[in-house]
Amino acid sequence: MSNTLNMNKNFKVELVKKINSSNKKYRLIRAKYGYYHISPTPTASELSKLYEKEYFKDLSVVSSKGMDIGGLKEIERFHFDRQYEEILSFIKRNFKQKNIKILDVGCGTGMLLKYLYKKGIKGLSGTEIDPSQSTDKIPIFNGDFLNFKTQERFDFILFNNILEHVINPQEFLKKARNILKDSGYIRVQVPNDLSYTQHKAVSSLGKGKFYFFCPPEHINYFDFASMEKMLRANHFNVVEKTTNWPMDIFILMGIDYPKDPKLGKLCHGYRMNFEYNTGKEFLTTFYQEIAKQGIGRVVIQYAKKI
Image (cartoon, rainbow, N blue to C red):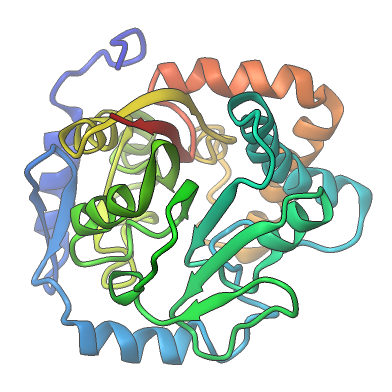
């Protein structure tokens, strides 16, 4: 990561110390590749109960992996469709053959898969731990991805807001590599946490306001550098990286949106207006450039199996 915006090289250590001194139940521990995970780590049984209670009770309200909610208003549809189109653009640029096989891990309600199907891609599959999820034309394995057995070899596997939730993210990457073709790619999207802008935002909000720290729902806390390091260690080469709007900027402007849901909705509207009014071509370059600085709310990395 460039140090252009990183004036304090120890900011991450300082931020973790603040979190650990303020939270009595969970602590952040540095993991092998530089990301952080919570301790104590929840058990698989505890996670199952959590998701049954929080996620599966109303999928019309809860975002399915952060990529398939939104009303029918033009500006909001632009916000979500642009994310789908980013993925479709990567597919078109990197796969010349027809009938490629794509697997969306943790596909939620299947909105991304349905979008790709409408665009003419037919070799689609998904996995989703919620047993109620299914689609008419796209096969979905209901269960843990690590228990997914298949003879298929996929061209492209997507992890959209998955790896922050799992006990051992490296096992997910190993599994993905095993079922990828030799020329295959993966797309990983996770929250960009413990970043410089979060560090400054926490300082501006005051003691104990760690709005991005949400255990046990989020077990792992990645940034661009740690995710790329873990991908390299598991025999993937990052070929593209991007992000989306850095929500911490609103806090640094003096808008405490984590405190007030109405302000959160307002800020969401601001970022959608920014995207809609600047346009897709600009946003592609803009988000790629700020990703180089480690800025943005999410880490998005496309990586090739090596």
